[in-house]
Amino acid sequence: MQFVDECVLTLKAGNGGNGVVSWRREAHYPEGGPWGGDGGNGGSIILIGDHNINTLFDLRNKKNIFAQNGENGQTKMATGRNGQDYLIKVPLGTSVYDFDTNELITDILKSGQTYEICKGGKGGHGNAFFKSSFNKAPTLFENGDIGEERKVFLKLKYVADVGIIGFPNAGKSSLVTALTNARPRIANYQFTTLVPILGTTKINDKDIVFADIPGLIEGASEGKGLGHDFLKHIERCQMLIHLISLNEYDNEDLFKAYQLINNELEKFNDQLTKKKMLVVLNKCDLSYDENKVKDFLKKSKLKNVLLISTKDKTNLDELKQEVYKIYLDQEKINQQQLEQQTSDVEVIELKKQKDFKHDLKISMIDDHIWNVESEYLKYWIHKIPLTTKDNIIRFNQKMLSIGVEEKAKELGAIKGDNLKIYDLEFVVD
Image (cartoon, one colour):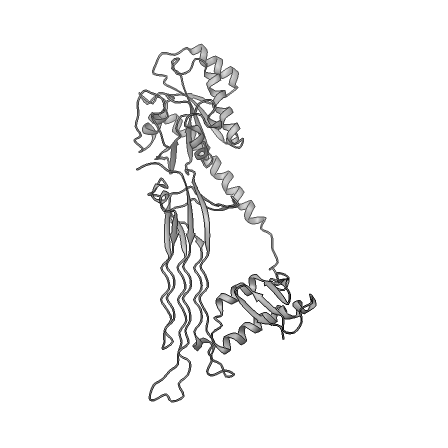
């Protein structure tokens, strides 16, 4: 399957079903009564994390996704069937952004984690819902709400405990193979690995996930080589193994190779250089210049550098234990940060109900014709079909509640003027 780590989707939740007006007409119930049922709720669109998926390939060609609409209400007070939710399975590490604002909406990081990205519209009430001691035969009913719609940008950043970075031919794929259950393609040429490879291994009592990040080169942060596409996958790693080949054909200067990779990390995101990093010199099974190693240690001022060989498994157990120590330390730090965030939770007062009068905008567009704009009225125009006397009265009450006529008169409207409210027209009394 082709590796895809970015895609754009337009999502539309289902609309709620409409309520209906219906009357009970049976021989033994001469008084009858309202019998119209409510509409069903529209289906929502829900993201769900799936550990069995490692690419966004299946979503790449699904430009538009629609959830099912709710069914209309029926007679005998029968509620319409709810629309079916649409589940979108995404790989762990998927970040979801608003396409227009680039604002982060959510991160899917755990298997089974769900997020309702678009909520389905609520079903409208039928006339049976509005029956009361004051109105025993209501002709009131509602349309269902419109389901939410949004355009989103999905970006996959792999979730791994340990990211293995380094130049091509450093032996990253061989190390992942030696340490975990992953079986990447291995060959003696650059850019053998074209996509990030994940592998899991048990070290003592912990299952630790390693990620083989495709080879970086100088200029990767600016788009050269493969690094520009895959540097983002390092961002979620808890720690890094910086793998450097001892083979003089791969690196003439170990310290320069070390610096170049660190520079690319800093240019892409300076937070990457602040991650816990274990520097490992690979291919010690081959002949190498020990003086170059000493020079590297002197210039880098690193105290904990391991020499390993993925070929003959030299010092791999020691490497695992070093990773385990850093993993435990990072777990403690993460727990402390979580406890700190919990203890610092602020008590926020509930917001007051929105002032719809403030959102009301009225302007003269022609002689004795006034244009009215209001999100509140826009919602109720859809919600209340003006096809029955009761519904017309109800909508007039909505206009009265935010003072439409009152404000129009303050602006100069007189009796007989027309109020244009979207597709409807009303006369000022």
